[in-house]
Image 1 (tube, rainbow, N blue to C red):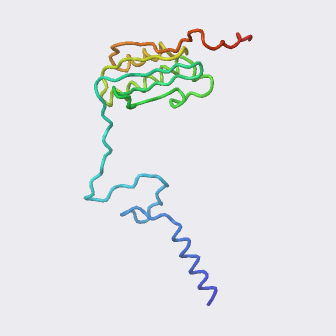
Image 2: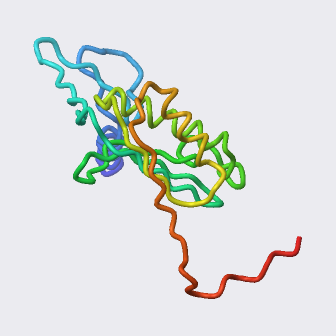
Image 3: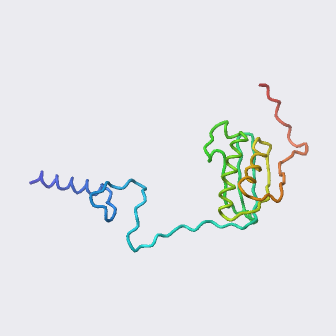
Amino acid sequence: MEKEEKEEKKEKKTKAREPAEAPGAAGAAPAAAGAAVPAAEGVPVIKKPKKRAPAECIAHVRATFNNTLINVTDAKGNVVVWNSPGKSGFKGSRKSTPYAAGVAAEVVGKMAYDAGVRKVEVHIRGAGNGRESAIRALAAAGLRISAIKDFTAVPHNGARPPKRRRV
């Protein structure tokens, strides 16, 4: 008797662990974790609304020696879209190349265009390799560039610069 009760408890536990099958999928393989389950008949599918942005925005390009960050913000400073070479699939020293900056800026330009941005004012900061290629990629993505402003920090004889590299 006791063995039978233990076996029944084990069966209940294993059934509780198994994922529930999708409705109407009798005998189908269990759905993978995170897989989309089809909506039941008569239930409307709610789509997430696309993020809309004003037609005129500001594209901030931060070009460091190791990376290039591109943000598109509205006039208030709220970020509409952003990207970097690391997010686009480049790792290590390849992130600092002009090609990587161009790829990242092209992705930003397409996403911004889809969000409703048509005209951008480019604000550049830094002295990295991706400055010019990022601007070219934004223009190639269909955005009209109204102005290019350089906000690179220039020391007015402040702290002493580091020693020259000997390679």
